[in-house]
Image (cartoon, rainbow over all chains, first blue to last red):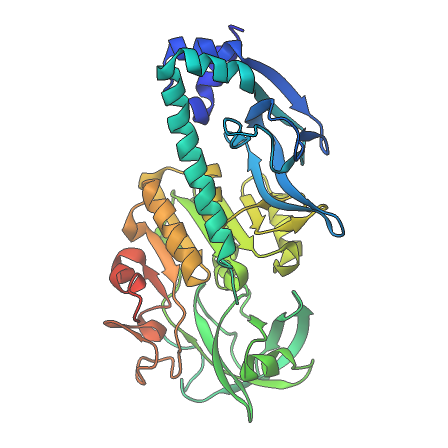
Length: 151
Length: 279
């Protein structure tokens, strides 16, 4: 777990989080690897873990019954995967699949939520970061909707 | 800048040497000057007026290599009567050329600096000569990166060249699309979002941007957020150029004529007009 704290501290998502909180987050974290093609999240699955990506690339996809998967976003080094894990009904809305070999830190959602309930300062620090992440994603999605490179 | 051709209002008939289909509606034409004419000297970022005899004339940026002036290269998307006629030309047919016109990318003014080249859609064509220039003089620059976005993988132009550039160790290339099916191995997302994946020293970075207005607007904003100075951000503006000499006024944008004072402007020079909705 000691090894995880520096890795968590170095990830842009948790940058600036104080050492006491980093230690708590580290208790909920583990290192994971995904080979190309392996799923990190599946639509409708329980939101058990979200991911801080250290290396590689992940495609967030929507599966269409006739057309197959369509990638709507890719995430890479320094980015976080898994939105709305703290919102009911606590399941994923999209698929996410490794495009290349991907290394990440997985954070256990239930354990983390429990720690946030116990320590509201930690909860606030994480929610601030999540609000920023969601704002960025929201803006990106809006730009994708306007036909950015339109003719 | 002086024009390569003697009378700037008189089109010179070039001959089509080769036509490459880039996407469903976009073509790259390689043109040859008339026999005995001097090589067509131009600077990266300049444009020509292309005249399809009997149809009309349109401004098109030069997409070829300024270090190879023996031929002239233009990449055109078929969207209107003239551009459709240009794209329909066959090998051996003639096309009138006036130019080159306009202010080029200031690539020579950035020795030692990091350079970000950022393009969206067909905007890769006007910056391609700048990329050729930078790569041909690679040791003179710091970190070089290209960010290129398109709607889908099928809409990417210069695909083979992009793959070749990606293979270089001294040039980072980021390609992104809005949506993609399962076999796409690149990024999905918008161009401004990829700026966070690039490496540069904001104090010594020059950014060259070309693409649709909305893409340039949000890209400029992201670069400013990351500390790049306004005067080091260059945008290529598109307006209704007609004469190419700043005489007719068709391409006026506030106090400037895009054909003569641009199409490349530093952002600080056009910021007020860039953000104005009525012009």
